[in-house]
Length: 408
Image 1 (spheres, rainbow, N blue to C red):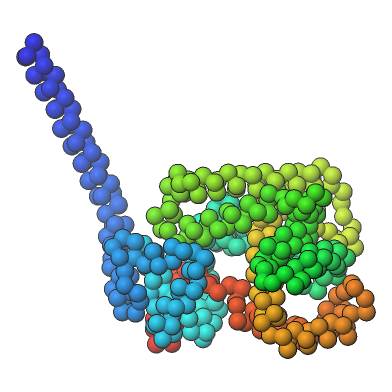
Image 2: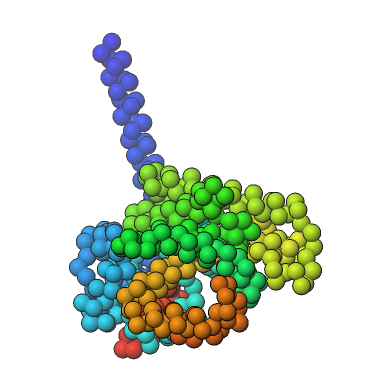
């Protein structure tokens, strides 16, 4: 009996030894096969680390670098701004785990970067918007994706022209604005309140109706889930951007926030796909004079049916991209604009006087908006103080000279 057990133990040991050597051989074979690639990677990595050492920057921790500094994503921009001040406005390095990020605050250097073909590609951090948005205007990358990006941009951008949008949807804007004013009147003489609670639903309602042709606020006053959930998904993406250990989507999905994100994206895609399907089912070729009054969804479906240059999936991603871009931008600017007007009573009086002089009644049209010169200046100054895109991540493909620095 003992001899039999010893034989079994010996066989198990042999299997273990054999398995160990097989694993070692596989690793060696992979190393030999990709030896040159590995050597190139180590060489490039060494240059990167050496270059980073020449730049000022905050103290780093092993493996995670400076990622913990922006773990509070709501204050990430403020944190980077403080770091920039601590560096006296100089270009500095910031490690997101193993990923080196170079923060360039100098306006002249920023101009060099955004106008250089060597920095035309967006940073890989935009890939984290997938699978919510794939190859959209906001995260297209690579030669093939960039070709599509340029084609889609050329198609969509004219439909988002400020004057054209105001002319097309003036009646809608006036109607929705009266509803917002009525809600805000309830807060008169009640003390301080958070205006974003009112602005969010208002901007989301207008944005969805101009893009898809249906309101975000239902007749019973409830807000459509698509509006609130897209914000949740966007904040989850930003949360993930600040945590490099969650970059692999498979790891992100096992977290509570990742599972919630996956479910939201599934519902958002279904919502847009249903609207695209309805538009296709009810499609009638549009005349040239009718296109100008179409919601973006129907314009894209009309283009797809006539040219076959778009697919329903591409329309889905572009609609989500444009919705997020418009909604997040207008929501932020509107809240900050109201805050600035409230903080500067003299500017408030001038704006009110100008509006009363320009507007002939309670509604406004596109020609009248062009005469609101002082209000336009206030809006532009607000955007200057609080930029819409305070961070513009770019990936370089070759060396770029910035002031006294070569960046590659």
